[in-house]
Image 1 (spheres, helix red, strand yellow):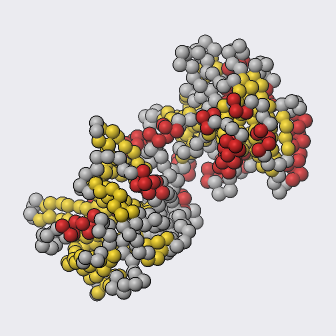
Image 2: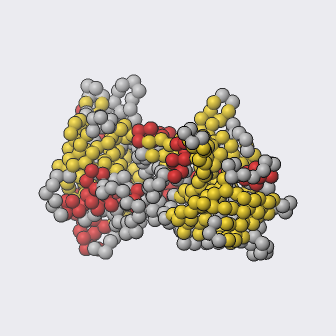
Image 3: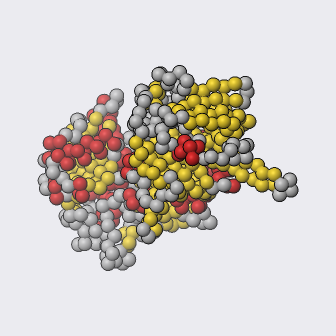
Length: 597
């Protein structure tokens, strides 16, 4: 059912009236393009219980309350001025939990509906960009399903319908397309967020794959109506479509209607997303397009990772070194490793967790940039297989895994930390494999821009460059400037570059421009700065207690000719890209780490 109902400030007849336990009378404003209204208007068959089932869900967006009901439509009316009347007799009622509902305040708003796409019976072209944009920003979706079961023994049929709210962070529903000759097939992918485990919608889909979806935009009033053919995918089949998701619903769109100004509601407040919303998961095809290609370890041959050493860099940053149960093909320096802590931390299903809502959907899997690089084999022109990997992790307030790692060391827990290592991937590196089989190449001039623990891929890249230069000094050269912004004694991470700089040939040079923002422990911050200044040669390091400025980037020689690699917190990255554009740097020169997996 795709009618969204509210009261009206000008027409007192519009609204919902309940009579007794099971009767609900609805009078609603509708737009003439609503597929439900169109179906009623063209259907001349008499009503009966078998073919006039309904399902609905009532949502109070102000407090996240919702209730589902289902039954039969006893009577319907549709007048010429855009009002629909329904008498509903319900025999199923269920209150649902508040998870994944976005809090918002709404009021009545008269709008003029405009039909933007009418593929009511079939969709063989791509959805309009505006429709895709609506899906990409939607945190609220309604999913309709139905169930039909025939009992051969009793010669009776069982039919019912279901309508559910589906919510998540904006973009939780992903879209992809496949071109088939002259037509385009559109697919929607809905990851299954942990719910009440009734599996009503998913169960219906197992018996009847036809579904309907409504995507409302409460800001513009636009509504996208979808019908489709759905299937549930599990475990490896789900992960093949959407990594780190063990259950999802994939819907091939068979019909679509997109109506501008269809919704007679207006958003009058900021939206408050549910604290239970898990992070947005991306399609494997999207991750591949970003360059985040993960080589997963096969489940039949799991690899263990045992924590064997740690090194404190600052009061919030440590490097953790894991020994693997077997050697792996390491990614190009700058790549990531996938660690699974579920064996140590997963305590099983929890319907609600008000103290820590994120734990409800937590998979205890983390991808961290590897901050080391293996030795380079000059004969094979490859980095050697490795059985140790290191990650440099900052303790973040409220960060589940970062605090677990740091606390494990601080509390000196005797039991060895043993986790699963699920694979490696590459998506951000200044080293490019040589298609002709030679040693990896690097740009002749580079600028690295890093903030905080975003320096970790550059630690690995620097090690990789050093390891190649150690065995093939004539085949690698680059002039590198590293701009680093760090807080407090986090600038100690720069010592990593001091430790290896003396082994490099003259064809490799690195100059560091560091900017320290002070913390509450100003004396420790100053001490860290003083020690670094003493340890580094003057020509190798310049460090100041202030923020990086446009003039600092402008002073870098041959800036517009450099390949520029960026990794760090969003505010620094956004400022850096704006500043570099102002200074005439081409977008094609920028390479930014994407934290999507």
